[in-house]
Image 1 (cartoon, helix red, strand yellow):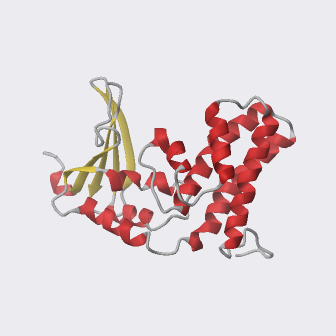
Image 2 (cartoon, rainbow, N blue to C red):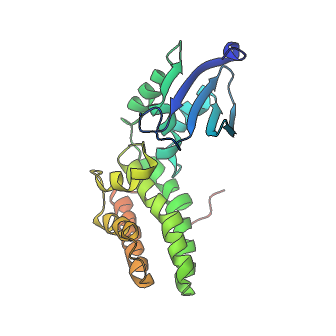
Amino acid sequence: MTEKQSEILAVGLYGSMAKNTDHPFSDVEFDVIPKIDGVNFFVSEIYNGIKYEINYISKNILLDNIRNPGKIDWPETISASLTAKPLYDPTGVFDEFKKEYEQFIKTDFTPFYKNLFVEGIYESMCKFVKAAKYDDESAIRFYAYHYLFDEFICFIFILNKSVITNAATRWKDSLEMPVNFESHKRFINLLMSGDVKDADTVIKSAFDVYSDIETYMKSKGVSTSSEEIHI
């Protein structure tokens, strides 16, 4: 701050240290909001045995992120700016982020559903189906854990206009969301139980969630496919 204060709007601490849930192996995470627009880069280093992360990101980009739940990682992307503990914030930038979020979630998220489906759910399901088609059990588990697990959870958070505040408990938190599917709960509980030896059970469970998502979108008047090429 001694060197850069004239260039900075705000600095916030986020993650476990901001929530007082840190332990001796926790990293230290900061949002640094510069005064100029269009800045977005990330620094991660180890200093005196402690890993730190500094996310340099402009106010205009963070506000745009809050207003764009058309990306499947939206609940994670905007979480830091909404949950940060201000260390330097003379103009109330972090309060502005919270107010923007509180206003934005009053709007209709339906227009964003199709992009979430096409860019997130459908693309990952295609990879998953390919693995299932070739009976590649290791790939089935890989895509279930590393793609569908996160994307189904994020989709549920977006349907509920909520953000992920704790990565470690996001799966539990997703099960408690008011707008939900029983198929989603079964799928998440199946993976977290570790009982995934039967690949056919994993496949059926994933398809149940996919089917429920399609049905939900159609109930909201959102078509999941098109009859023409859009240029």
